[in-house]
Image (cartoon, rainbow over all chains, first blue to last red; front, side, top):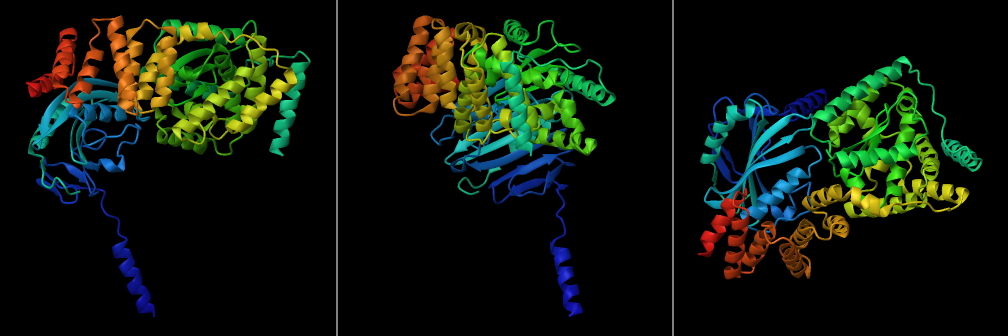
Length: 188
Length: 379
């Protein structure tokens, strides 16, 4: 009986061992469930969550790259009640995504610097550059690219404090963006 | 027990009011050590808010709001404090007060109000929090001061009010006890009456907030969170009205609409961005009511209809854009919107024409690349 209890405890301890929240990024990161691959820079860490890619070098508040695909049927925008439809133009999608950012209670003073059409992994999309203040009042800057194909909204975002940090890793982000490939358009 | 205390308090205030004792006596100026600490912390938090970019800068509006506040305060002011109003760019329906008497009121709450009497009700309520030193009373009533301040800071961060700090979050989010909120209502209403405003507007304002909560699908707006619930506070006002007698008073609807027109316009845009089309439409129509000749009012209404996309909205959008162009032929944005509508309807010739007109009027627009891409596709 004692052996059984010990065995159960051992099984529990191994299965309940906490997963490390941050792990070193692979050179080529593949997310099977989200259906995309991307080449990542050396010495960056990523969240061990598999629903999205969230990567940083010095710490999440200092710079982050975030890639995720959303099913628009699930109403992925949390701060605006506007709804994305698959027949929308990239400009319309960009404006709704920006409206969602502006409507977030945790951000303030959002200012758009750029909003232009781009092609992401072969599909027409958008690219926005904007600044905002985070919950601590710190001025941040972000590049947010996206595209809508069928029911899937792809978001690629780089965000860092506007002063010093943004410029430091902006070229790294551009390299990451260039290597992004959606491997399975229909799959999440 | 608590209810009895509240009822006793309400009765005492009403009796006092009926007997002509209309305003609270300002307390002594001297602050105890703990209150000095709270004031100092509050001042630091206010400096942070001032730097945050959240403050709505409009000198005329600020002067107007402070003028209404001055009318409400006892003659000669409040010893030891200089109450004032600051507007924050924020969609949340909220107003709150720092211990030194600085009242913060969110832009969309102001935009929701219909007249000056409703504004007076809110300002009087908030002023009482400061005059009666509610922050320190609340603070002293908590057993563990440190964990209290820490926990409300966490709450503030959680609801997106991290910028306010501990004192600000207590005022803005977690609020005061039910008894103190009732006191603020019941001592605030006599101030409203004394300044010549119609206190019945307090009930009208609560009804507006009820409708707002329904539209937003929230139980209680922040202004009422964890305090006597909306119905209870509305009930307080009804009790007050019965006791004081409905003698009417000023609402200054026109002056209020004129003074707040810009903030109503800005708030309507914020509501539209949040996809709250009905509130945005109400505000846009209110703005149009004061600025009928302003093409921006019609463009905004056009955008609300176009983006909402209900039955009949496309026609309504087109009408509003056309009116905006009629009022100002050089205004580019309505042309872009008409171009987008035409593009969607595959009315290519119209789309080409409207986009061309748009770029001719707004050559430096940030979305030029999109428009050029549409035009290329239409060739």
